[in-house]
Length: 407
Image (tube, rainbow, N blue to C red; front, side, top):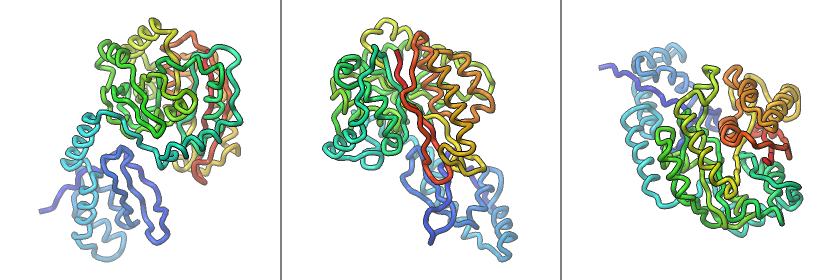
């Protein structure tokens, strides 16, 4: 009996195979439900469009037979199904079980363990301290006026170290007092989080530099005020880098003498698609209100850190051209980035949104939701740009990012 092929999961990372002896397409799961990487040969990859929940194995077999000019055995199609299913790349019961297992495993953990030590930064404490010292040594310039927060990149530290250093260098010497001993509200991009929702966790964050305790009182208070707006013990915290990278720089500058309020900001997809401001969504508005009310009462005990990147341009991000930092199209991107940042600096959140929303954000600013959240919760804040950069994350694609200070 002919079998209907299940849906291929959405949101998988797909890229050309980097191995010359194994051409095709590399598939991996950014949500880490599966740790496996599959490389699917070009001919078989051509059949993936039939994994739509409606087409059958015979449909795929007939297509490949026409494509290759020779009979493709059904066993070949079945082997592709088996490989995708085994590793959780299909939207089926196997994937549902894997997802439930991963979410349960994270919920049961007592601590949020480092997900990027050894890859994004050194895993050994001494080596990490030495590397961060090297990044920061030329940028230890205290803020000239009292500041209430910083924005830094969340790109890999070795790629964005100058902007990280520009931001965290502001916490040097006397300026340390603005954050040390306080609760640091960490607003990070949730790259795979649920749209129009915010991810919280009550787990301490562990890095090679020690353990950061959460502010349980604030977390519980915000959750009680806006439970429908929040994914508590959000699984995305288990692998997301946008907050983890901020933690290591904060620990390098301040030690572990502060608490954290780690908030992952999901994308404001509804706003970008509809053109209506994010707070038009009830869940977003309730979260803004809950965080703003708490912040107003604890204003002298809080410091804010945003983990944000800006534009994502080039073939890696769906554009049909090669992007080179500070060349050609990227000069126009710089101009628009700087205009958006000017509106952020002036606290003009509605104008900022008006500039971002065309084409559902054509520049693909993955720091939009944390920035807009901060501007909505702290409308009196103003900013200065400390550093702006563009970086070729690969030969065809560019990420832009910046360092800001808020007063």
